[in-house]
Image (cartoon, rainbow, N blue to C red; front, side):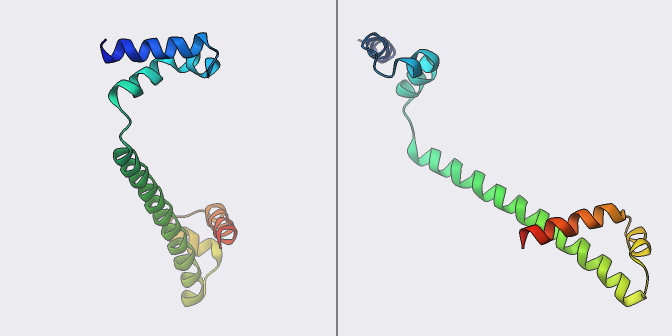
Length: 109
């Protein structure tokens, strides 16, 4: 018997015997495909790792952007003796954006 037919028969038999019936009825095609083409654990782990690495990189990049924005605005206020409004305007940022970023930074630290 060919593998696709054997897997399909196994799924059908499990459904008939009420073994994981609800799951197999709704996910039949995926279960059959996964069984036929085999689950590659090494590939799945690598993809999961790379996804996590990318997510961490993006979070770090965003955190760096927030830290830099806060630092630059506060340095401009201190070094030039200017108001928050002028420092934000000079860096092309709204006061609201600065306050939002500052609040986000406080929550994450």
